[in-house]
Amino acid sequence: MPFFQSSSNPSILPPKSPFLAPRRASNPEIFDGHSNHDLTAISSTKSLQSDLDPSKYTTVEPEHKSNLMGCTANLITAIVGAGVIGIPYAFRETGLCAGWAFILLSAVMGCKSLRLLVETAKHVDAPSYETLSEAAFGRNGWILCNLNMFFMAWGPMLSYMMIVKDTLGRVLGYPEEDVAGQKMVLAVSSVLVMLPLSLQRDMADLAKTSRLSVLFDIFLVAIVAIFSPTSESIHDAGGIINLLSQSTFRPGTCFIGLGIISFAFSCQHSSLIIAGSLDNPTRERWSKVTLIALAACATLATFMGTFGYIGFLEYTEGDVLNNFPMLEDTNNSNDMITARAANIARGLLCCTMFFVYPLESFVARHVIMTNLFRGREAHEGDDHAVLDRWDRRVATTIVLFTSVLIPALICTDVGLVLAWTGTVAATNLAYIGPGILFIGVHGQEFLDLVECRWGFTSRSAAGQALIIEKLVWYLLGMPLWCSIASIGKKGYKLHLAKKAEMTPAIGFRLGKIKHKHYMHKMHYPHHRKMFEPQHLG
Image 1 (cartoon, rainbow, N blue to C red):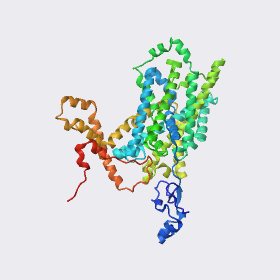
Image 2 (cartoon, rainbow, N blue to C red):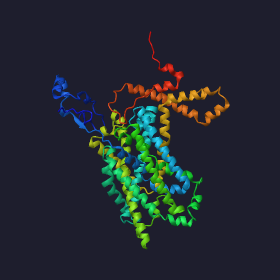
Image 3 (spheres, rainbow, N blue to C red):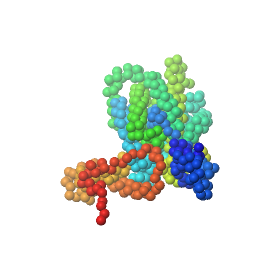
Image 4 (tube, helix red, strand yellow):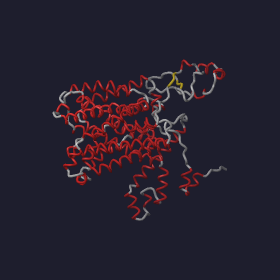
């Protein structure tokens, strides 16, 4: 059997390069299907025989892929995170009925956003969020996306460690005043659990722990639903109807609750990495993943928010588990049972933090890799090929882990970390980025649609329009959208020109699609000449 493997087996690559440098180009696919006799015939020259020497090559194991349920578990874990424990407080700020509506809205918008982002990336054959941003808006888009992705991952990583520090120490019996004991618990548990999981190479390797995390989330929500004093609250309010009428919608504080809920449903920074880990990532399979994941997250959030808020009403805290009694503060048997159940819930929360931390670490490591290492594979976010070398993967992961552990041992306000992360990075990546990228990539089509409807695409060309048309034009923000489309059109044109000069990619991590350019011709007959064959002479 020849030492050169087929594309379904580990790839044959040149020997180790310097730590930061790209590998030398290789094309082992030309040897697929050749026998040893064929290779001998091919390598008749001395130079080619030297190139075919097996001792000069190392194998890179192909990227591990997850099935439908494994990918769904990863997406659910990435979405839920630590946000589920803050949903009851969000209901307190929005009102019960408004909270239900906001959860439904966030789930629907999140599902649409995830599908739109992946479909746009597939359209331009971009394997990652940052390369998609670069395709539309050039180097500036690439840099801005990388910064937002890093802070969107690094901030939750810090918050997860801080939650473990504040929670696991209490579960293990350390009093609240024993700060040193809590720090020791965090340092030991994170090194023993978080770090080894983060050292994995591929996102698909976390599918099993993500399945466990989903189960822990279900048990956590069940404990809150069972042991919250909901019946007492309903009785004191005079019935469920009176309680709903008193907490339908609170306009004064609804935006605080909406921010918490929307942040709890944001995971777009890791969506393309998770989508690429799916085996056979077709549009239909990714749609199933997003539908199941968002439906599960919305169900968990609804149960947690409803029972957690009704149980404690205006006394609901940002972490609903803090509303339950601590084991050392209870005297009677009923409170003892509730305190023990709450301790189990706190332990489950810590376990979910252990399992969701590596997902965010993968995203932050991905950003570091695209900026630190050189070469096309690194720039395009080919994690499995660049980080297949254990020294690169271990060094990058440990440096990142240390950069999070040290501030986690020092900081005390997890709410401040989540607030800054959610306000800046989550808003840009989850709710602004996908739409802007879609308009930018499809800039020509967008401008054609605007011209068909309005007859102009810029403020300077709107001089002859009716006043009512101008008013609607500005109210809809069309100058902004047309400017984005124009910039994206130019950026995408440059991207295609640059891509044409590069060696064609062998594989497409998100799958290859057929671009149906003829649809443009069908929808815009007045541009039909653009698609007609040109005859010379």
